[in-house]
Image 1 (cartoon, rainbow, N blue to C red):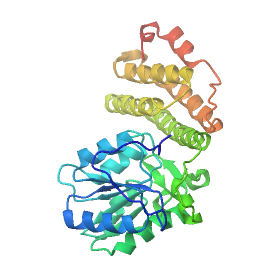
Image 2: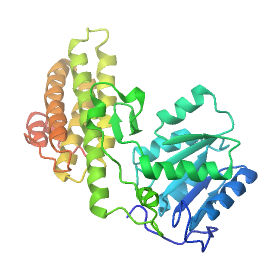
Image 3: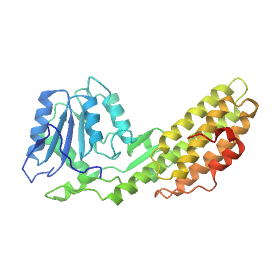
Image 4: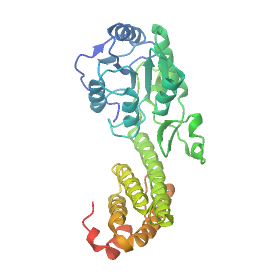
Length: 326
């Protein structure tokens, strides 16, 4: 489970069973001792049972990998890294096991551009410093009682925002698993999201990302087909890059057949860069097969992904030198 408890070095504990945050495990990422101490004190008073304080992005990332966290409160002014980029990596499943982790970013410089960048990274909220002790607890409690649905677009994973309202994306939004929801119901102890519900949400998110990535590959393949001789090398390199992004999404797939198909598709797209006279035929096949992957992902948003055709076999039959592609 993404929020299963485990011993955490230097974690502060409290025996207070009540409060807005009763039973919650909270990660604080803040290089400033004063704010971190103030925040810890307020969270103790609100009933948090586990508080992990880390001063650097590297230490925050390590804590996220270890898991057992219900919410993260991270400052944007980390000296050793980009906290907004860290949030984006959480949402894309590159850090930890929970892309739906509630995350609040804090900042002493709440300019519009900074707040916009933080939200565009997938953060749930941004809290300006200085803040009062009760403000932190109220923001966290608000996430438990009214968190926004999640969505994946071409360049974003996270809560629905105004900038996600394109190409009907918000119509495919879904409610993320949220252990904090139990706090708003006044439970004395935080409860875990069910394994089944968490798995279903991850499958839904992966399918959305796969559908979008496959559409980008199909569009890049058609752009390569339409490119003139001078622009063709650039277009085919763009096709290869888009296929590599598709491969990154496929890592999260449970279907071995789909992983093999996507691996072959990426290899075929890369082959197009060097295919010479055969390049246009490669692009046509890539476009057709990427369309098939996108459709299968759209129809299998419950994780039950089935290919309408055996993509790996078709590619192997036409290009046997790609048979060893992973």
